[in-house]
Length: 213
Image (cartoon, rainbow, N blue to C red; front, side):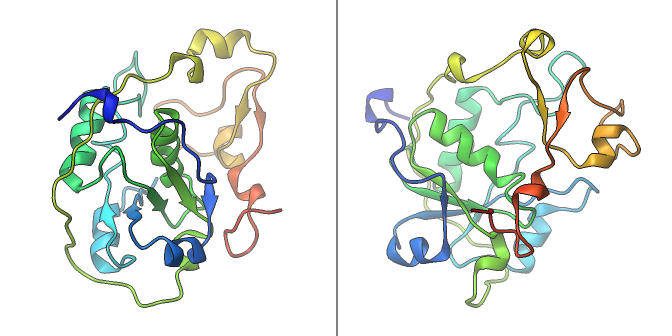
């Protein structure tokens, strides 16, 4: 799949863009990264209607490694798995990627962060699916396979559970009910890391799921 020398430098586009950015950058690759806590299929949601040209990126298989008690529910994927998964979808390591979901960026933000941390231009579509005012496309949509050279994750951008245990502050961005342990739809144990403060993601968004100023 080529050498890492084909990689661009640090990401230069803003981490959050609007629909006008897509109109001004028709060559950008659009990625649908819908994923649901209640077990609904993000792929089915994509098939039922997505932005024109958007490919579906599966969080469980492309953006995460196999779950385990030691690694957790969604550990980072191996760089080779991540690169191969995106290349097969037609996303190359020299592309500009705009990702969206319908949950305020909770899942699409993972793809954006993974790409930006290895120097690939990527941004989150502000407002997600609802921000698109044009018609949606139904059914399967594919792109020709691309080239994506694996690149190790930047260790300086990562923290371990030991770091969390000794950090000055740990921020838990989940909904308050999950933070408090009132409900837990996916993880084996409810509650939060001792000492963590709750800053729920929805509190950063307005009624249209766009980021607050």
